[in-house]
Length: 140
Image 1 (cartoon, rainbow, N blue to C red):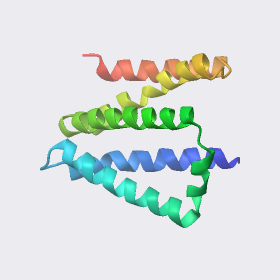
Image 2: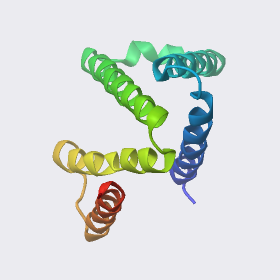
Image 3: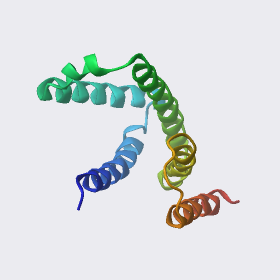
């Protein structure tokens, strides 16, 4: 199995665990505070990984465009997490997480349009099933 597939599976597992842990952690506090605590831990751990691994020498390889795109990615991540935590505070984790994962469809569309990634029947079917599942959940 290719390394990136292993990483993707591990990401999926930890993301699933994350939502349940966060729901428990948000019980008596505002979701923005919970997100602030989570983000502080993430920042500290990622700084340690980069310092320990000597990754900071790559900073000199960054172009201005890459730097701006990474900043924009940070902004969109922040907005996504703010709304995710607010939804999770009041909603059912199983619903919120499922709806959130429909973002895969947005990612697919943008990857076809902006990254010229191939559109295949398998990807179209998978994306359609994800959207169908989200509609089943939100249908009243």
